Amino acid sequence: MDHFQLKNGILHAENVPLPRIAEEVGTPVYVYSRATLERHAQVFRDGIAPVGKSHIAFAIKSNPNRAVLRVLAKAGYGADVVSGGEISRAIAAGMKPDDVVFSGVGKTRAELEQALDTGIGQFNIELEEEGVVLAQIAAAKGMTAHATLRVNPDVDAGTHAKISTGKKENKFGVGIDQAPAIFDRLARLPGLKMHGVALHIGSQLFDLDPLAAAYARVGQLVADLRAMGHDVDRVDLGGGLGVPYKPSENPPSPADYGEMVARVTKGWDVTLMFEPGRVIVGNAGILLTRVIWVKPGVINPYVIVDAAMNDLARPAMYDAWHDFAAVQPNGQKMVANIAGPVCETGDTFAMGREIDAVASGDLAIFRTAGAYGATMASTYNSRPLVPEVMVDGDNYAVVADRIAAETILAAERIPDWLA
Ligand SMILES: *Cc1c(COP(=O)(O)O)cnc(C)c1O
Image (cartoon, rainbow, N blue to C red; front, side):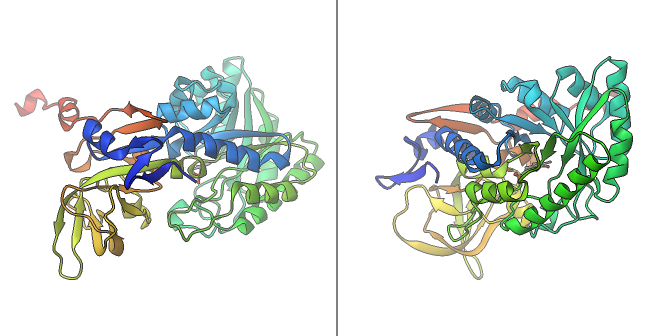
């Protein structure tokens, strides 16, 4: 459930009519609902209640806006970060360093150092050499890095190939067969405290079975590590829960997920770490856009909107579906293609889709744009960087400015030798 609903025939975000935001901030613009964010944070927390000791680290990469992070920090969430920049964001948003988990296959030495100096709570180590270097840096500082070893359980998560991360040919984690030996060597290093293992098999998952299979493999690994004499007190189960992009879609709920986790991890006696991203923010955001033209086409008309692939990359990148709705629907429908102004055929949001009838100048939204939306935006075609707004009841605030093409131009230089 979200808070983007029709009231008196006009789409609102909570109590704010979207035309007001379009008028005052301009389009395209992302709009987030604080109430929806808070609700999703609570629903996920309630869902995993049956698992016992747990820690939730919001996957910042799905939506790194500082105001979004502040809402989640207030809800008691920590952060899963994948870069030095995301560490800075988590701290700037008010998350406690100890609640931050550092994931990622290419952490640089500078980032490891930054993370140690910040005092983050957990490093998810992706390869043995990273662990060795982390231990050296920590020991030289007289510190201890708290870590898990990320394993690749070799399961097919059944999602889009570009967001599948747990097959043996993927770049993430160490092979689960190599994990005991690597863990054993890392656990002996001064400067490093190995707490357990981590995994994350993919995103937008609609089937709990691959997750359950992966978790069961990790459960066996935990038993093997303990048999070798290691203490294991944490297992990081990653994120990945899917969200409905179409009304007909019915992904497992956080409650279904929590029930599965409780069943599979029964008796593990560890703190379970969770890294949800999309399921928290996906339906808490929309992209508000204005129709520039309705261009006659050979088969269907093209609805050309002022949002483009640089603002919302998912359709071009993953063939993703985002529901499209008129802000003031007149009850009529039309079959159309929806595209942005960018000079790429890939800048197409939908082909031959039945949508609310719209005309030049009308406002419309793409739904479920809160995750992997603004965070992937670029300025391709020298378009401004898309702004973000958060609504809170009757009020809203601009939580990220539109960065003008001129501002970006001003950061570029023509060297003297080209004068
Ligand atoms: C991307 C990512 C997540 C979040 O995935 P969602 O599908 O958004 O829940 C969690 N953990 C890691 C390591 C990731 O890379």
